[in-house]
Image 1 (cartoon, rainbow, N blue to C red):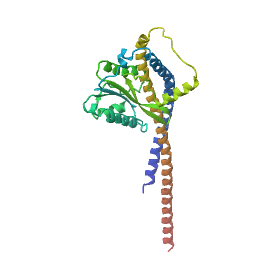
Image 2: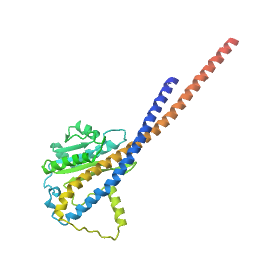
Image 3: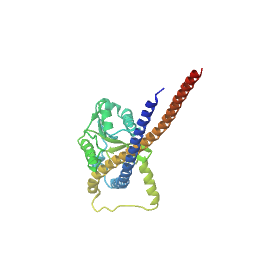
Length: 306
């Protein structure tokens, strides 16, 4: 049985860990509130640009712009995998990495075997995982979430567009965690290039669009173009792609903070349960020690009386 000193040291160690996890939970909660504000401001704008582009496409020949053109043969693929830079967020990173590996295995196994699959890894965890396994990694975006800015999204989507226009890859998809609520995320595989014919909608987008449509039921919306549709598209498409990438990064950041907050809350609760068990064990060990001493004293007194 462990000595009383060992149990006291263990209780002190667990209490210190509990203080750390409680502090990390509070920090994650504060970051989550800020991240949610960013999402709620960005989502409507990104969704609306996509809606306008879908409307404009009905007035022009989509093949006019190269970002709409489907390649006849898909030989090269770029996947943008978005994870966190740090751990201690439950299964947040592991789940998105597993989803990326599933997509590669089920859709692009032959392309990967031919060495024509490329990855942009946003976040240290994805970069470390895939670099150790010999994947073709483009760019280095470790530490992106330490100071997340719109310029980061511009840089990432810029790399994707440049490679697409130079025919270095024929398809671009982004794999990320969409923020659903504090305790759950949606693992999304979103096609980015070529721009889909119909606007891509995530589960959260579907929910928001249905709510918006219900509020505007019976109201027909049309647009009057001040310039021709082609000119407007030329300006809107780069902005749409930048804000789509920015939305994805914000979604992943908020999902990460929510996952970390829940993980640290669970760790704090578990530490409290462990402290209770250790205190019970300590009290039992102390009671056994006192009982043993009393027996020894009584036995000594009886021996002297004899």
